[in-house]
Length: 130
Image 1 (cartoon, rainbow, N blue to C red):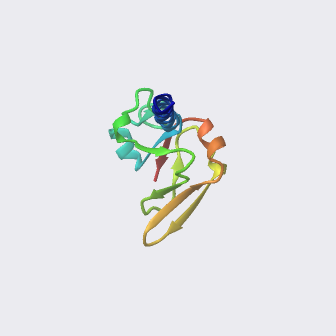
Image 2: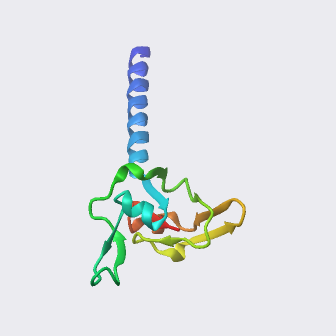
Image 3: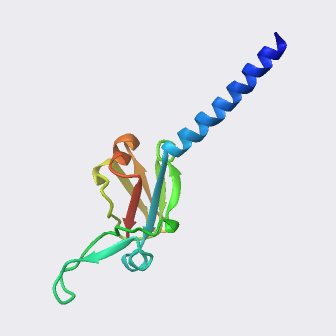
């Protein structure tokens, strides 16, 4: 009976560990914050369209450099620290209505995600330009 209990306990620990890893992977989200020039140089954003250099629009790169992104847990980490700036713009497909941005003149800002499930349903990759 003790041998059977021990085997069940070990199997339970393995399943718990597997579930923890799968949940962590499923809840992973990525974000990057930078200036227009920084994100274009890093390969996160690209300038598209325009004529003779005028009227170009900024869009997420099709082959994003993923090494510049920061990993977070999309359900647990609902506040993202932002550098000091006058304005922030979400360049990815996320709904800006689902966040609240608070700006402090001395310490930068914070972006609080109001509904993480809905916010991250658009994409697991958040791009913020300041």
